[in-house]
Image 1 (spheres, helix red, strand yellow):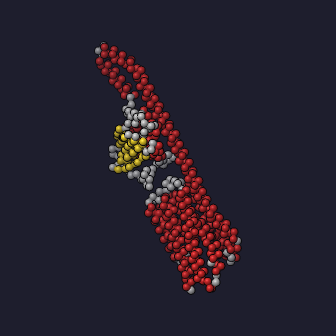
Image 2 (cartoon, rainbow, N blue to C red):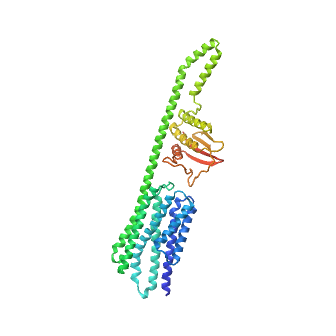
Image 3 (tube, rainbow, N blue to C red):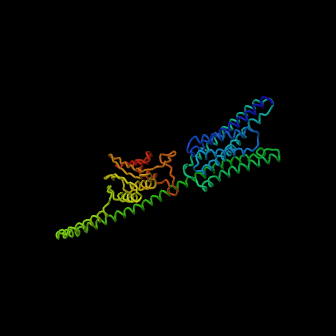
Length: 456
């Protein structure tokens, strides 16, 4: 083997290895936003690259398609080992990258073939072997650059379009999302099969014979990638519509709760007005009993009157009848469940704070507390503080578990259902309406929710 032939062989191997490593790195970049720990994405790249290099170095026992499939399966197992949540999303990521890898490399190969024919094959002669080799090196570099460009753009656009990365993916959603990838990679296989069959039967290259075949192949690969992206965009738009619908449903539920609270307040005031209306009769009755020295009957009557007053008089007086009703309902629930209910809350008077907005905060926050309070001595504590235009609410509850914050400042919910995770987001939404925000902390076996709002 001559020196130039050895150089050709070494360059070919180096270009293949470089492409394997580059695609492995981009595999890690692709899955990184979806994995809880960033080191998991690094592990995906390392395992994928290692598997592919080993399969490339050993004597050929399996075809390229199977080899890359093994590499992707190994990378999927790493993702699952690092983070066992959302397995269907990980399957989607693995299948999508498998398809993207074949399609982008095939697109680069089509363009590279055109350049190779134009530069290398036109300079085929014994006198120009080193020139031909130099041009070959250039085409290998061009192929790698094109692969990087295509795969980087495809992965970048997909990750940008996929907005709800933390949402749990269902089986139906996964099937819908992987169909374009499966169609794309199946079409690639069919096109390659016809290419191979034609060359075997005729001894000629199909693309050389029919140039449009290469153009149609490139168009198929490009459309397949676009189809993957379009389906993801449509899926994310659908998810956004679902979020809006859930938000609207939650607001409707909260309006229903408000109506119930208002009815409770109106009933309370009716009872108070009724008692005030009868107060004159009660006073006359007591005067009559005292005048006739019926002190025992007068005492019994007063006790009965006091009990009636206690029933209609609110136990909690915050300055807002609506908030009073909400807190009284939660107080009764806490007493039934033997939960200590500590309250030092006052509604800020003469401010722009709307009682309805505050009721959204209190309902969602206290519902979360009631659902999650735990410990040997369960308690819920509510405290408010106002300093000039700033109004701060601090709500604490005992909690013996461990919150999972992930990459967010709010914990990931463990609830399921159509309204899961909406409570804290709705509290934050209201707080931000008043130029404020919320924070959630955990420590000393308690959870502390702080809400800050500007009320003037």
